[in-house]
Length: 134
Image (cartoon, rainbow, N blue to C red; front, side, top):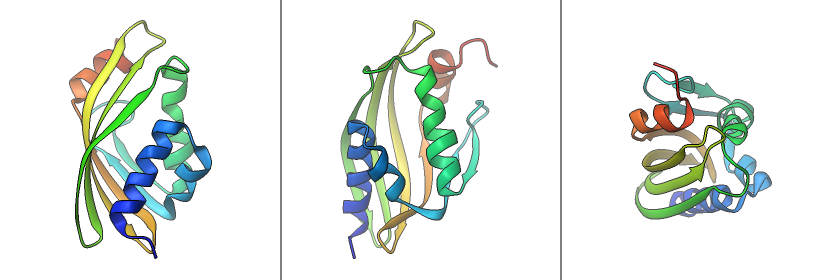
């Protein structure tokens, strides 16, 4: 069995590298991802398919291909929980620059991510990724 920190680091590196197979394989089938706030993407995404195809995949059409840069800053692990801090930068199809610092609280069981709560500057997310929304 792989330790939780390794699972989360591998997942974030897969997002950075655009490795769709590893991204999907990182999640348990019944995983959840909570993105708090009042954005169009703010809700609890339930199930690996919804997380990978709708939540994460829904960002693809907003970002200019080849511009996404993700850098893992740090991780803290305790038991089955891992807190990861990363930066995300990209150009958007709206002509804006997305540049955010994020934190995710991951729960990992049996080598798969079972839940995530992600925190970011949602005001910046709204302005850069969803201009014109309240």
